[in-house]
Image 1 (cartoon, rainbow, N blue to C red):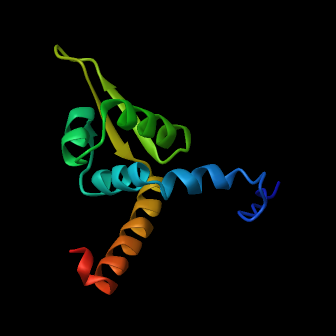
Image 2 (cartoon, rainbow, N blue to C red):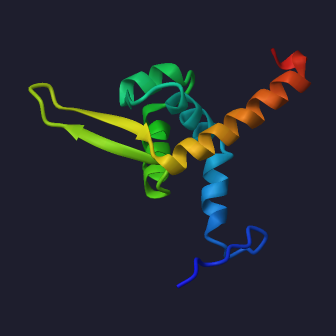
Image 3 (tube, rainbow, N blue to C red):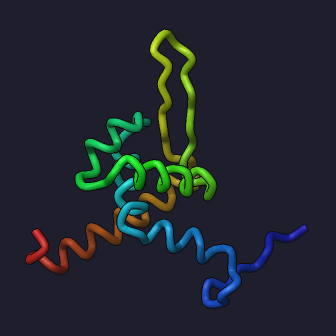
Length: 112
């Protein structure tokens, strides 16, 4: 069976939801923050992404999880905690997002 064809220009294309998340401010910054580390806890991500609220980080992580870009691992230790990490697909997307960010940064030095 062949893979479904996607047309991001069609309003009903399921890829649009992922594209919107990846290109949103918090989606981009969350992917970038996870791109820098093997995994991170919620609090680490919140501190790394200046200005994001707990609610928005939680929503963004849930959407990235649903999109298959982030994995969530629960550690059942004395002090239970959860780690978030990029999946293989998430790493691919994060590299592309970072390349875009870096190209914009080089083109528009006034943003520094």
